[in-house]
Length: 177
View 1: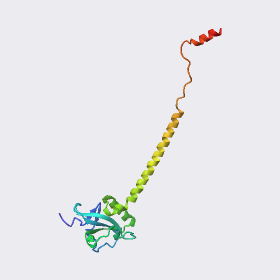
View 2: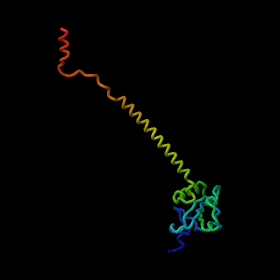
View 3: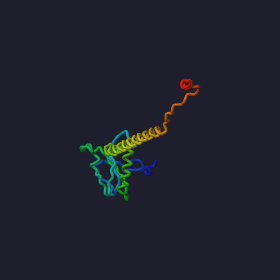
View 4: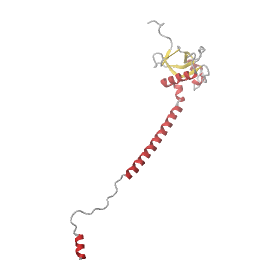
């Protein structure tokens, strides 16, 4: 197959990042875009690189590169890390952040899993609120149904006169004569 037709780089979702190079090597694009910090991992295919974190860089970007490494890495540790860039000229910060969040959601990188528990806690809190509302509404519905059942509950019937010939009233009538 012709090697000119196959783009060099590493693909994450539908985005083609540049060929991975050592983290300490210079060569960041001049325009804004995304970067991914990679570590070698033979279990990943087709290229043996596992994403550690996705970051946005460029115009008005608040993120910096050292934030990706939560632990202090020695010089040899930094040598085993790679970086790959996705240049996105003429893109806004919101567009880059949206793609970054999409990639974080899809690949669940190691250094960004602790970044989203706040979202998970928020979802758990909202779920608890919905469950409480559901319980309250269920309780109100049960109270309403019991009150409606009490309204339409059959009233006790007045005592009925027994059917047939009555012997007692006849004896009372005879005693009165």
